[in-house]
Image 1 (cartoon, rainbow, N blue to C red):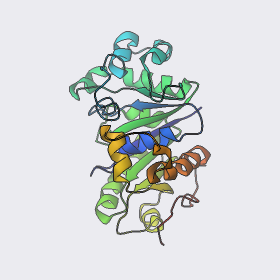
Image 2: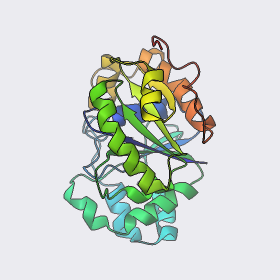
Image 3: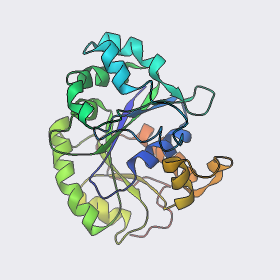
Length: 258
């Protein structure tokens, strides 16, 4: 199984919403791991605060410390079942950004545990900042995915983040872009400008995004909504991604030109 790390260049492109949309349509058992050093959002968002933050990354780190073996053994009891059948699970993140630095070497142990778990893992690493505490998770991922809107402003921010990711990961061969919403440039234009393959795109689906980010409305029929319909082929493209690919994700660029 594999670890996929999602990160943003800033400007609210919706990394957590993208991670959840992918998880809800993922073709295998999957864990969403909230590795954003600024804090996790899903318990207060998708679950609308109905679950207490008793389990998750902080509890795991306190119990396992910096031991990858103890981290792997203690991971499963800390997971929250998202849909009731065990196929989609959540590792809740920290609740206070001041806790991120205190986790220290636990980030490296977590990265090792997430790559060894017998399930795919989508790590929500939030906004990429210099000297990010979650760098070990980004370095260990099979693929690091930069989530951005296809605008000049976001593309400009992305350039520096791509350089940062390449430094963390020792190269740019296992980097990809995931585009969210409409913008001023096509997927192929963004790909050419940044030199990183676009693995797919997700539409601006405010109703579904609100359900995933804030728990509003009902999840009934959510699989048929535009966001999740588009997330399904993106998930397949991520799993099939080959380093060195230079093609825009097939079948995921509906409504785009270029």
